Image 1: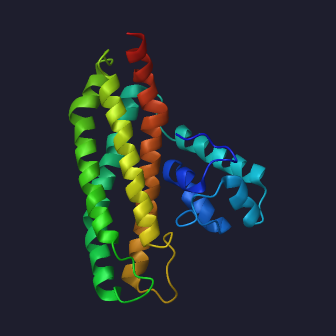
Image 2 (image 1 turned 90 degrees about the horizontal axis):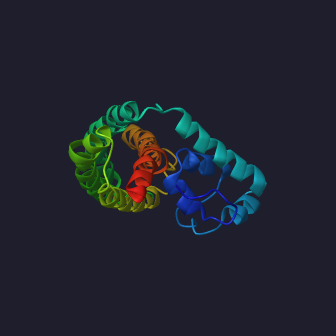
Length: 223
């Protein structure tokens, strides 16, 4: 999890902190094409206090951690049931819906062209990642970890970075999930579903990177 400070770029925050993207949308802060700007500059441009924006973002960090079980075994089950299974289920209908919207509205200047391909790539990335966790990493953790767990944890963190890049592609293809005026029901349902899916995925990665993985990285480092 990236540290929340005024000098951090808004794009990095939106990709790693659950709820940040929606907070930026409400504030009128562009975190897609203009996401390289710092929190301080973005807040000033939006007429907000940089300190207040940082405080709001830090509150999101605390909220994400508070909503998950503390005990390791329960946290793992929470990750599987609340995120792994839900991601799989939602992508099953989000992808064909994205394909439909692109097919019907592809000539529109606001069409999310490229979205379906990004979602397909993300599904492939996530399925491999989650299967590795479910079949290898999580059982190892439930046994207490080992001195060799450091390498697979590093790989999982790297794959989280790949997923975050694909989330950035999705945000750009959809203009920050901003619906054009007069959008049809399918387009509206697509962006509503995507908003939840993207925020869920960021929460999922935060819980692993900031809560679960450090417990075993410390053990591996001291072994």
